[in-house]
Length: 116
Image (cartoon, rainbow, N blue to C red; front, side, top):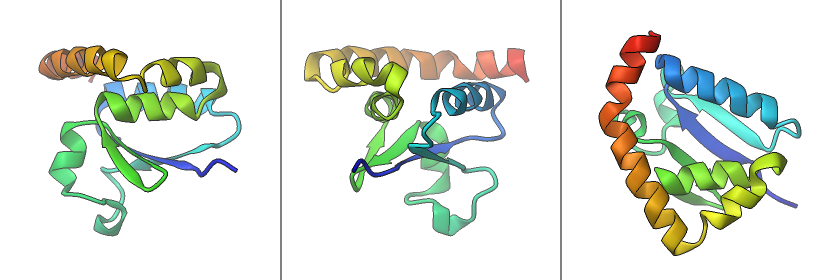
């Protein structure tokens, strides 16, 4: 039996809220436990709150993942996105996705400003 994936997100970020809302709709089997870092207590944060807010994090099979690896883990727990999650488990594909994620992080504040 597959364990539930833990995903931490920034509930104060309009972009994050939209994305997590979409993922919740896709997660019809409730395979993912989403934790809003903005409202969760310190005990719900496995690392420093600022670090959790700086990058996307997930915990899969006891391993804390960050960035592209965390997204790929989340996708593996959603049936519709599972093939994509497995593709990005492969090192070359994950490397590319991580580079794209880092580029996105540079423009994220502008997108948040537009949405929020």
